[in-house]
Amino acid sequence: MHVGRHWKLLAGFAAFVVVFAGCSSEGGGAAGDIKTDVGVTAEPCPGSTHQDRGCIYLGILSDLTEGPFRALGVTITDGNKDFWKRVNAGDGIGGKYDVDVTTYTRDNKYNPQEHVAKLREILPNVLALAQSLGTPMTIAAKPIMDENDLVAAPASLWSGWSFEDLVLESAYNYCIESINGLDWAAEEFGKPDAIMAIHYPGDYGGDSAAGVANWAKANDVDFPAANNVQTLPNAAAGNQDQAVGAILKTKPDVAVLATGPAESAEIIGKAVAQGFAGRFMGNVPTYNPALLQSQAAEAIKTKYNFVAPLAPWGSDDGAHDAMKEAVGDKLPANDFYALGWIASYPLKALLEKAVSKGDLTRAGLRGSIDEITVDYEGALPRRNYKGDANDNVVRTALIGKADAEADLGWSVVKPSFTGKTAQTFEFTEACQAAG
Image 1 (cartoon, rainbow, N blue to C red):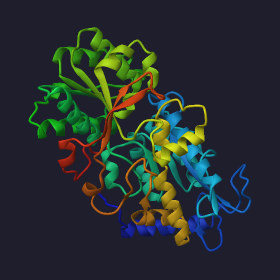
Image 2: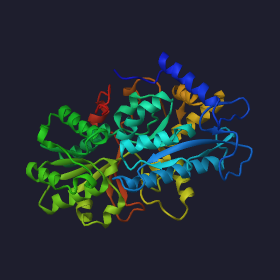
Image 3: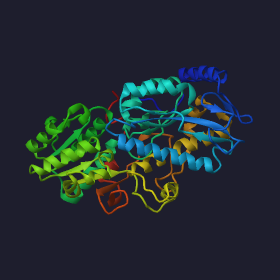
Image 4: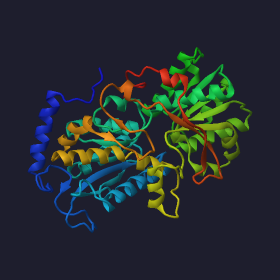
C-alpha cells in the first residue's frame, strides 16, 4: 500500500517530538512570530550582506567526485547554488531569510551507504535538502527523512516519488520517459518488432526498464527476459562488453539505455562499430555533451536520441532567462545545470508558504506540501502535489539529439511530445518498487 501526502497520527507525534527537541537545540532562531527548529538561525547567513535577515540552511547530497554521475552532479549543484543566490539577491524567503546551500554540501559518491552517512552528519544543521541525488541513495535515506520530517528536492526521476510525501519531484519520471521515447521511435522509424532495455539495477534503471516493459505490453511487442539486460557502472563492471554482446546477439530495433554517460557512449560506440543497425534511445542521464569528444561521437550523432524533461539552453522562458543572467558569458558544463535550477522551485514555494503561515519548522514544511502551487517561470507547467498521482504525473517530454553546434551540445528533434502510450498509461503505483 502506498502512502499519500497526508498526515498519519504516528507521523504527527513524531513531528511533535522533533519540534520540541529542535526548539530547545542550539541554532534555532525566529523572525518575529515565526516558529523555527532545526536549520534556521536568527543570525545572517555566512557572507550575507542582509544583516536584517536570518538564515535557512539547506543540505546538498550529490555525486561530486568519483561516482558515475559526477559530471552531472557537479553541474546540478551549480544550478542549485545559483538559483538560491538569485533568491537571496532578491527578497529572500518572505523578506525575512536568506538561504545557504553551501555550508552543508556533501559528496555521496553515488553510494547509498555514503549518502546515509553524510545525511546523518548534516542532519542536526539543515532544515531540508536542496538536493538529494540518486534514487537508490534517496530511498536509503527515506526512513531518516520520514522520522525527522526532512523534505528533499530530488535529483532523481523515479516514479515512486509521486507516492511519497517528503520528496518534491519536478518533471516526468523515468518510467514515462522510456514510454515516451519508444512512442516517438515508433512514430519516427516504424513500430519495432524487437526492443531491449539496458540499464543499471535498482530504481533508476529498473524504473526505465519497467517503462520499456509497459510500452511493450501496451503495444503488443514481445519483450522476453533476455532483452532486459542489467549492467553496472564501469567502476564496478570494468567495461560494457556483456551489454554490447547482448545487443549484437538479439539485434533489437530499438535499445533503451538507462546508464551513465560513459557507459552509454561505450555501448553505442562498440555496438555500432560491430555492425549494429538499430537505434538507441536514452533516458536523460545517459547524455553529456563531453561524449561528442569521445570515439563514439559519430555513432552517438547518427544512431542515438534521448528524452529530456526541459528545453535546451537558451530557450525563451523566464527560468532560462534567469539562468543565462546567472552564469553570464560562461556556459555551464552541461544542461543538468538547468535541472538543478528547475528542481529548486518547489522547495522555494514551500519555504515561502511556511513563512507566510508562521511555521518554519520541519514539521511545518511537511504539513504545507499540499498547499503549494509551484511556478517554474515557464520552464514547466505550474503544478501542485494534491490529489491522485495519476492526475498529477507529468507526461510531456522533449526528444533531443547530440548537436556539436548547440550551446550545450544538444538540440530538440521533437518539442513538447506526449506519446499515445504515455498519454493513456494508468499510473497507480511506482513502475519499479523501491529496493
